[in-house]
Length: 282
Ligand SMILES: C[S@@+](CC[C@H](N)C(=O)[O-])C[C@H]1O[C@@H](n2cnc3c(N)ncnc32)[C@H](O)[C@@H]1O
Image 1 (tube, protein in one colour):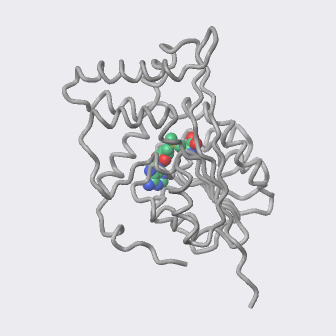
Image 2 (tube, protein in one colour):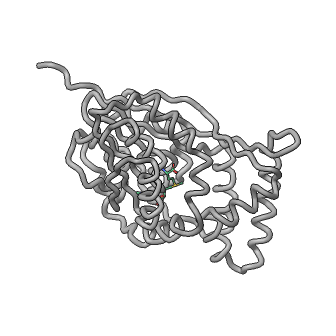
Image 3 (cartoon, helix red, strand yellow):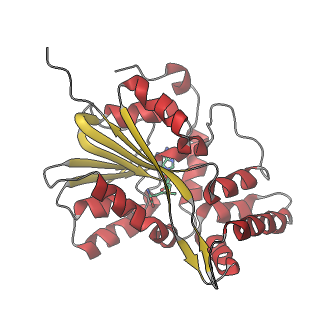
């Protein structure tokens, strides 16, 4: 197992994580998560989770993956930087009649021993931690030999990647140790993160479905519910620039609209399955 990259560990990202927590804790993430529930369900089904499995859902949010996994009878921990999500997550688990162990934690420093889980998942989550090399080492480290790391990562080219890039242009640049989240949607990049660790990587480009009555309805939904947009609106300077950013995001969204009579945006993501081989017999 390669050592954790020490150079990256020395960077102080605590303020950034406070900001991330504030951002993801704003708005109504449960409403947004409903749009990607079917993608979480497909990942869990394809990863063949069994009732005797121990499972970790990293950056669980309001628990899309964790609740689905618990429904299979497996034992699951849902971990997130933003414990503000856990009231909703607990309610969802109770409604589904399942138990999940919810834990506050950081994808860059998972609080578990090596080889703890049969499945380690993260849907549209761990890609937002700043130091990707640390995250990959951690996801892989806590996965058992013979187990699987399963990820859904938004791509740079898709709708989510476009709005991330456009929005970033209205804010000061990130420090160099904060790696761009959408790189996780690039196949060669993901292979370069996991293959040196020994992982066998399989990827597939897939698309989520965001159906709305109109582009305006989609824009209003995200402006009202989605933490990153809410925080962008609160913090942009001067405040008038929000209207400019919103107009740019709206025009971009129109270009992605595949609906006929109503709106359908289908954000692209890279689905990644990393197998951790069993140790060779000696
Ligand atoms: C887009 S949401 C995805 C949530 C959920 N996995 C889903 O599919 O609905 C991103 C999540 O990543 C979490 N997150 C961001 N950085 C993190 C980190 N360093 N460690 C753990 N969670 C993190 C946020 O708190 C947020 O809940």
